[in-house]
Image (cartoon, rainbow, N blue to C red; front, side):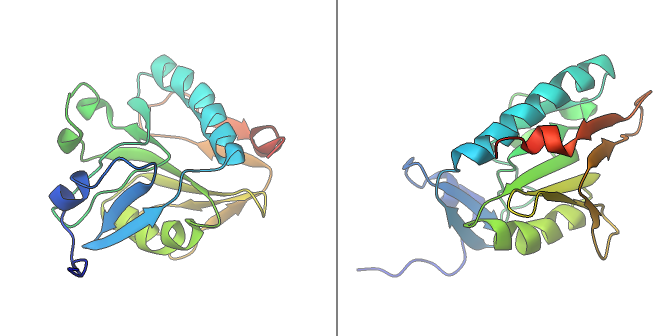
Length: 181
C-alpha cells in the first residue's frame, strides 16, 4: 500500500474524492476536516444574509461561500467559510482567477480551530486579505485580523467592517449573529 505524499499540490487536492470532507492545502500540507455542524452553518447563512445586500448596495465585491478552490500557488488551496471577492475579480468564471479577497470569515469548529487560527490565518495575512474574522462559537467572540496584525482585536459585542470604497461601514450585532448557536 503506497504511503500518502508528504507534499500535495492544488491539482492533487482537486482530484481527491467528493466524500463530504473538506480538503484544503497550505504550503503543501493537506488539511482534512469533516462537514461542519449546524450551528456553524447557521452563522454562515446569517453572514451571507447580511453581507450580500451590503456588498450590492455599496458596490463592493461578490459574497461567496465554500466549497471554493481559492489558490494563490500550486502549494495552496483553501475553502474559506465566507469571503468577499474584490470587485475587479468578481465577474470571472474560474476560481483560479481570484487573487484578492477583501474579507474572509472562518467559523471555528473543534476540528478546524487550530488550522484556521494558525496555518490558514498566516496564509491569509501573507496573501494580503483585507480583513479576517475568526468566529469562535464557544467563546462567543470574534478575532479580527488584518495583514499586519501581530495580535487580533477581540470583539464580543459588535462587528464592524469598513472596506475601502464603502460609504458606510457594515455593523453586525454579535449577539444576534450567534443567537441559538
